[in-house]
Length: 339
Image (cartoon, rainbow, N blue to C red; front, side):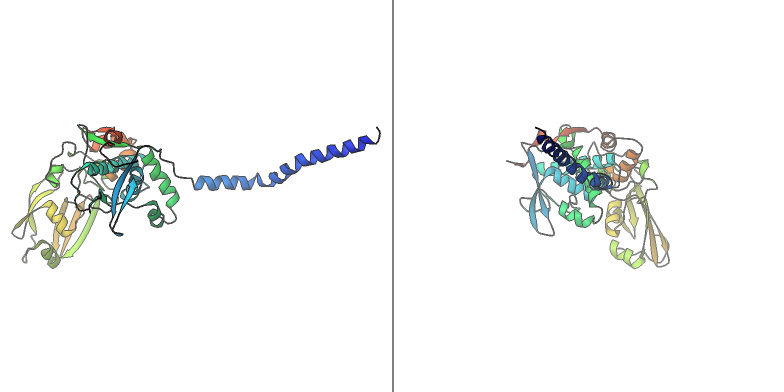
């Protein structure tokens, strides 16, 4: 019996060592290395996952590749939001833009008229509709900034998933643009078609933002060629004959011809129809306020509203008068659903 005790002691010691060795191996890595690993995960978070459901697909004409690509609706909205609004904007502004982008494409998907796209396509990936890029393309576009940008953009889409804007039960024509001149434009003053939800509203948040003022200079010869007129030798350029409710140019007489503000903007490549000009020798200096057609939601205005504490529902209610937030589920029987 006395010889057995050393064996018991030896076994006990070995047992304790077996328990301690794994802990001793882990301890050196549980300090700075663990903190570093946690920091790396935090700085490169995975984009939030968008919940799955009935898969509505958008047939996107990829213009450069000359092919039609079927993209899941929410992934399409991510790709549009990424290209149509700066990721640095406030989250509530991004959510408002996501809602507008989703509404815009759903309306076009429901339309029987597909203008400017090949058979089988709903929209193109250009400014003719909405600019869209895939996540693979965004990684190149956002080199070095992809992780935080895609995280924020995807979050905005996720938090508005399936939501669209409707008026009297139908998806609206969710027009949007960069920067107003302090007011949005009535739809009929730019597009001729009148929509009750696209009315002039104040947008003071745009004033003095980075794209509010702009100036361009061109030669008199270039100006004449683009408008197809002759100015003569005087300093007079043209007379404004009418303005819209939002203080943009409705019509103007130049060189003996009458133009709408939109016609002048397009011909001269101006940022806005709120313009003024001055002749200086052989050059004409043109100043503009705002950037874009002015109809619908101002993106810089939306960002300003968000900074002032407004949420995305308040933002879209301001820029799209009398609309409601509905769900795409109401239209799934008419949309392309992947089986």
